[in-house]
Image (cartoon, rainbow, N blue to C red; front, side, top):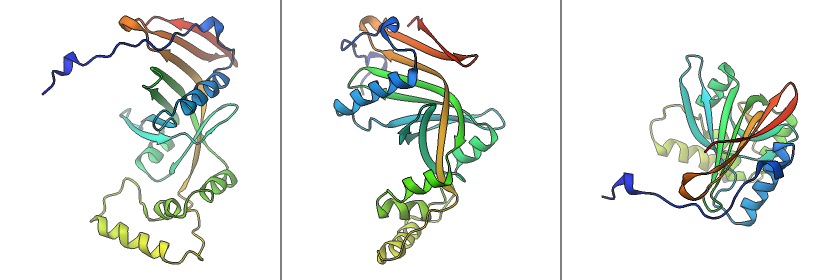
Amino acid sequence: MTNIADIRKEYTKGALEPKNMGDNPLVEFQGWFQQAIDSQVLESNAMVLGTVNAAGKPSSRVVLLKEITAEGIVFFTNYASRKGQELAENPFVSAVFFWPELERQVRVEGQVRKVSEADSDAYFYSRPRISQAGAVVSNQSQVIPDRETLDAQMAVLMADESIKIERPKHWGGYEIVVDGMEFWQGRPGRVHDRARYQKIDGAWVKSRLSP
């Protein structure tokens, strides 16, 4: 087995100068995200979402970014899932995007709020039918007896394409209203570039952090 302590990679693909970045991190993020798409980064919209329950215990999982707004970023999920329950208990979250092909990372902090029913409908009905069916049959995070149960429920929903699959009321979107964002660019020798934006008294304050 490879010695884990010996695994390392030298970062050489770019540099980051905070003073050359704009005043709004969400605008900056849009540019970085487009570069990730253009560079064909694998799952460029995947982010690790961290939540904390009422007891202060954290948990993390990967979800998919689906929209960048003027105030934050949007993802969709099952409101009754573990993450949904934790968000109901504590709306403050963190998220991380890692784009290894660009040697870049973006950290996000903020507070979630549910998007409108209309916005949840619009996205749900834009999804492939199989994804709509998956949202219906999944009691996300709940114990189930076997895979066959899911497959049988999916088969019923997929059998007649003339029947519209309705969006479950327990499924919809959250917007992370961002109050902190950090841009990270890998550099040689682990002397990385880090630019942090914090919202203070309604205004964005930008600074460079030590690696």
